[in-house]
Length: 529
Image (cartoon, rainbow, N blue to C red; front, top):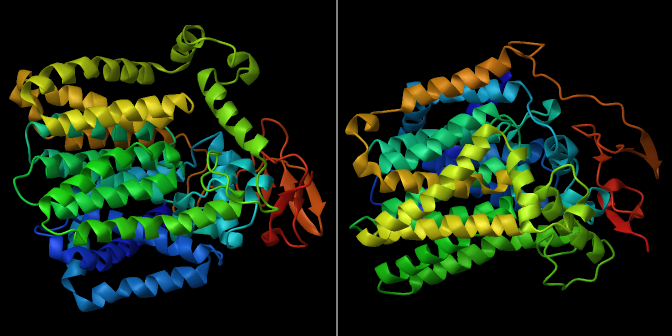
């Protein structure tokens, strides 16, 4: 447990210092004190870009970590007050309770499915080598060049398979949102919806695991909050709009179901143009966004041969490590059909009409998720009825974002976890729209009651853990997996419905006829035809 808490604190401190360093680039547009949570978030984005650029060629190991640490010392040397601000944030009662909740969630090693199938493998590959050509052929989901996994490797203790950034994101997102809603009585209900989701995430594997779905939901919440603050402000809000664009770009490198955030980024870009007399800032932001995406696109091509796996609309590269187009199409097909009826035959599911699979899909989910879906659906007409009359453009734009996001995710595979962020925006907007009908007594601080629920949810799982230790970290499951010899390299290939967890190198989704490109694993993989 102590090791987990220590990893969270170190990660928060490094991100905070990197955030403070990067904020110097925006100081001309900052007219208020930047909260510690935002500094940490900016640090995460900066570290994602920096580490992924280096990871094009280098493994994410201790030399890279030491370089990151040395750079982070710069702002602390230049301004000692920075250390005081971090201490004030991390030592507050709310932060300490949130860190405890996150640590409890991480310690129990939660999760099944994708977490054991390929998430941990992605981080093990990042620690083993620079980007591996054609890695998606060896393990199909690793054709997604996910920057969140690189970040987890950079700030985690890979030797222990300990990765804590989902927990850290839970801490900063929860803390930021409750401070925002305490400032504005009406916005309380919008942000309350977001915080309820974060609290209930302690019931699932979201906080304690490494899943990127939780990351996208958190970034959707923070972007929505920033947008509402900036759009309704009477001041020039260049920094908040720049931050929305930056976080939207980052979210897309984490998972493509964040693509609808491009709508919020586009509106923010337009607002920056309207608020500035010259085009200098818009041009600078455009160039920054392009530069930000370049290493991500290069990484995509390296691991899959495609610009953005599994999108086959742009086919530019004919390289020997390219994941075959038919595999890419099957990937999209299986994601969509599996989402309709989990566990069913995807080919039979593909023949069903909407009203044939939708009732079974709804029944498949638990009571909490069913209630969430119904609340989100009811919130749409409620929000439209009240906000169209009031001509509240900020709320209506968030409504459009949420609807577009849900439609986008469902059309690419109706997995409920893809839509959590968008659905809770709808619920928050519904509460916001009827806030004038709710007695003011309910707008008192809900922080500690929600924290207590989160602690109860995480703690109940913790005490059920068979092995409890103050310093040791629980190991992931060790499943017996047959090994194979590939050119003197030992690899593991799991059987159907088995998982790799952190046994490395292992594959659950190998492309047929996958072979090594050379004598070493880091030389990459190709498909022999």
